[in-house]
Amino acid sequence: MMTSFFDQFMSPSLLGIPLMALAFVLPWLLFPSPAPRWLTNRLLTLQGWFINRFTSQLLLPVNVGGHKWALILASLMLFLISLNMLGLLPYTFTPTTQLSLNMGLAVPLWLGTVLIGLRNQPTAALGHLLPEGTPVPLIPVLIIIETISLFIRPLALGVRLTANLTAGHLLMQLIATAAFVLLPLMPAVAITTSVILLLLTILEVAVAMIQAYVFVLLLSLYLQENV
Amino acid sequence: MLSRLVFVSGNALKSSGSFGAGLVQASRSLQTSSQSLAPVPPLPEKGGKTRHGIIPEELFQLLYPKTGVTGPYMLGTGLLVYLLSKEIYVINHETFVAASIGAVFIYGIKKFGPQVAAFADKLNEEKVAKAQEVKDLAVSNLTQAIEDEKKEQWRAEGRSMLFDAKRNNVAMLLETNYRERLHMVTNEVKRRLDYQMPSRTCTVAWSRSTWSTGSRRASSAASHLSRRRPVLPSASQT
Image (cartoon, rainbow over all chains, first blue to last red; front, side, top):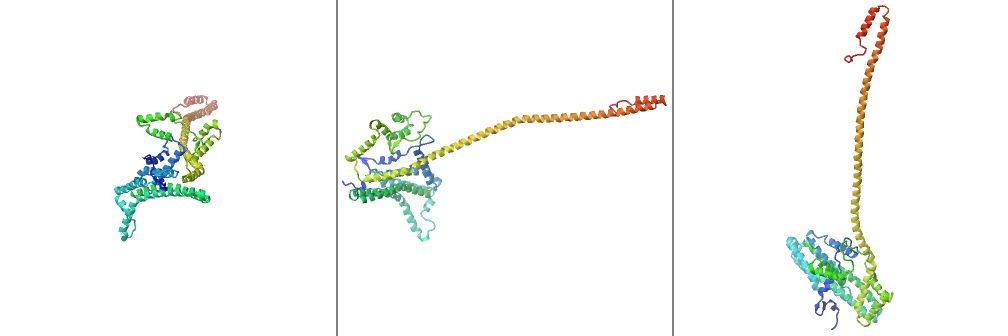
């Protein structure tokens, strides 16, 4: 059996027992729960500060009705950031490279925003399908285009996260393999490749954080439209 | 990490009946601090000491009596060489990935670690400073209130002195008034008496002058005059 570069994206299982649940419960262990004291240690202080700051910034443009989503959006952000960053370690499995997980996160949340909009303010929600100031002959075409764009949103959310992370991991594996293979043959080129790998790692760290943020930001944007 | 899992789930389950209590009792052997809950024991100033950021200092203390200072390092090197030579750990492309991510991680910690720690400490200090400010404001307000109250009490004492002064004032006015009237009475009496002296002198002089010529008529007139005109004016004439 030839090992391929895509083996890292296989759903992990041990003796037939799927370990997927273990894989995405792990980040929960890394976040300490708030302690019953007033002054906490540095980790807990920073965690609390980050969550507060992030949630307040994210929900600034959203109306008061959308503030109910604060908890789910903040926890989604922490979940995605921790999964992405942990996946950068060697020999780890990144659950967010699985399209099933990302679609499982994107579709229900997006559908939730759409249904809230259609239920509470149907006119305004349908009004989003036609941008202001369109010339009259273009109206039918534009409505179709906007409807397609509306339905593409969950696909885009899920596939964006999957593609970014999968591509990054794959690229890291490829360049690392190149450096590893070149080391006995052409050490100088291997060193250059290692430098490229280092830069790519820095990029991947940034991408991991940014993709999680973009996912949550877009969801808050969809919420803002519909609430 | 498993112990932390036990702590976290133990905390969550503590309130959920007998199973939770059992779990807390089971994990009691893993807890090393004292077991009372109140007052909450203070947090240690710094975290556990580590060598090179990961390895606890306790390992070095454990091995020091038998293997000296280089003991743990020899252990680590031996372990690494054993894993590599027996191909328990195979060097492959993932090693390069591990090396690069390790380099990024260590660089990040070395560069931004102290800043982040100072920021976290600053957050805590701001919290304490805010509460301290409230406390100081309350204390200064209360001190000010105490001083104001003392001043009011002093003023109240002074008020009785004020009343005494006013009473003295009134008494003095009355005294002055009485003395004025007494003085006026004395003057008036003196004035009447002063009239009597010259008139008596005059009468005596006239009677002496008329004594030699018409002595009977004069003496009877003088005695008649002296009888008619009283020495002191009566109260009805004044």
